[in-house]
Length: 159
Image (cartoon, rainbow, N blue to C red; front, side):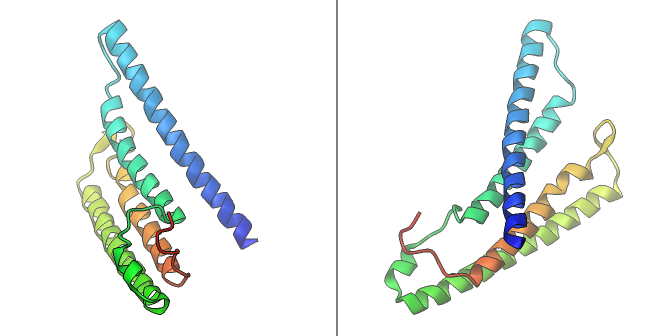
């Protein structure tokens, strides 16, 4: 059951990533069309597009950590014995988890500061709502790196 739930969450994450990319492309095309043909665009499209790109980048980073396709330097493991490779893997994953946890903490602080000075992102949506991407994404990435620290490392040179 947990494996099935996890696969469902992964599919939902992929669907959200693809849906957001499609929505951003559609928004850009509509904005271009309105400017070319009507000489005006949607007032809220620019901030939504900018924040959408941020969400897209963070969702992409979350997907990369899930599949271990994030940027990594694998020069050191090539020089280590399998035992020390495992140790280096665990240390690097725990360190990365701590960095992501720290970024989530500071992201939550940023959201808190934004809530203290209420402003509108677009009419009807407070400015702090879209900023939740920072603490949520980095917290999930931190958890994924922490879990990976206790799993076997990938083979050296494996992509």
